Image (spheres, rainbow over the protein chains, first blue to last red):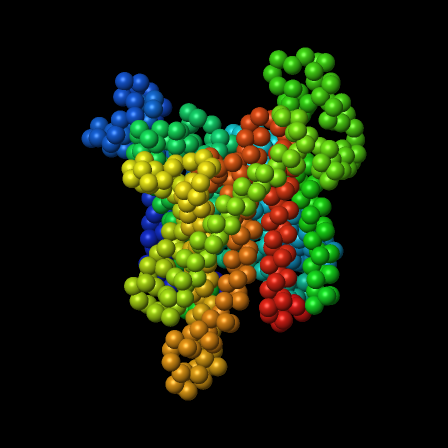
Length: 285
Length: 305
């Protein structure tokens, strides 16, 4: 059993390694994570230190990405922005993962009325297009980092629940679940020990793709003034300020957005590659 | 068919009620006393009390919900900030959003379908590679950053187009392109996959064996079948654009519904926020339903599903 498990993950790894996009995505993701963790070491300057005499300077040797209206170093702010973005998004996606896996397992495993009710609730949450649900939640709770985590977790978990439910429905009809029941395992232990572990792969793909959406949502809400509050370095917040000064300092509109785009691209490529490696049949279509 | 329509309509009811409940609860999820927050800083106890009574915040929640729904339907509910009937405030903004979404979906359908067909027919050519890169960039691009880039290029550097506001046709071009990029990428991907699938079917192989000219095969036999799912995607994307325009509207100062909702959050006009969000989500659900029904009409196999 142990042996077989190792070979199958080896096959998946080999398939991943052949996918150039996935490798590129993985490298980008690792790089951004590295930048986020070591931001204080990498950033050339203090991202919060104002220098009003050096306001809105274009890129130079001293400030490779230029300076913003308060004379703060844009490069350092972009680097610290990775920290803000990844810390909020990973926490939110983790909560959404746990919540979605729980709801999805219960709905798929028990089926029936409970499933019907849970699915209708998910339908309602998914009836709010794009970031509208997150906006609605932040509208009530107010802006700020913790509320942002709550909003993104609630807005992301239905996807996890859907994926988990679909897997749970297939898994519960398999022979090993029947065997688990035959040896007298309770519902709870069957779900935790047999259903959930066998449905992890599609959930992980979903988690990677949801990281991309979460990063976009954080910066989108912050751009609208509903997310991370200034002066904290965040790509969306910095782009909102850049929008005001585009006529005189267009460089401000480039770099935070580029960082955001590359991060989202990385997660999407990695997620797609993971998906292809796990479902090789889909790829050639 | 009738049975299918009735069943879909019945399924719609709990979703629409749920949407109205979620929208209604926005004001009641506010930590603390909503009346105090609406009254603003420095309000007296009397101010807060009068607001509480004016908006019925002292009533039981259930009663408040029904008053809210009745107020929306009869247009008696008024905006907190302007005191005008709420639908009178929202409908013109909704029309602006719909205008933007419509132009955007037309542009992105033309780009997406063309790109999708060409890259499927000329598989593995440079245009196919370009189309794949375009799709990838399209789904990863932060929409408001794309807006900023287009402003830098066309408004600040080239000075061809205005950077925001509402006016003539020239004001629509940049926001419509911004809003449509991701959509055209999705449509291109879908079209390519669908055309490729049809190209591999037996009946297409048969007409190829008959020696019909390629152009005729594509137009007469392939596209007719391949474009059915594409029409659905376009419809679903249109619903999405109607609601997903918040960021684009904010970048370009377009006076649409999404931007109005965000402005209302800042002016603590919770009634405008509640009804605005409810309106966007309900439209989204209705457009999706319409797309499903149209799809079932074109493709009878789905009616049973």
